[in-house]
Length: 102
Image 1 (tube, rainbow, N blue to C red):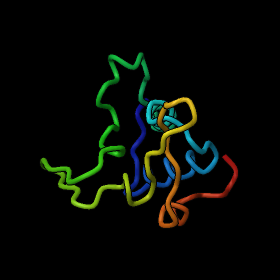
Image 2 (image 1 turned 45 degrees about the horizontal axis):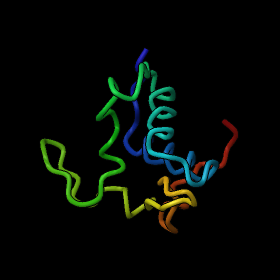
Image 3 (image 1 turned 90 degrees about the horizontal axis):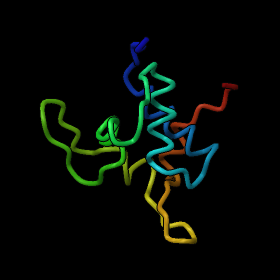
């Protein structure tokens, strides 16, 4: 069952996930976020677009305008050895990490 998420909770969840799993891919992070929020993750193709705005750089428009999105602000994309990409936290992103046990 999908749970109601408080404002900023997804940002803190993602920052904490990256803190515990440096270099995690957006796909892994999105899958964990779905699980945390009670969204059934079926497969990457069917889930295309779910929570992807958290990993887009630049201005995000639409009905819920996000002029200062989290990618680049709280976390940055990095290239890992072998050529695959993942994410690492910025200093501002470290402030969003929740250190209690989960």
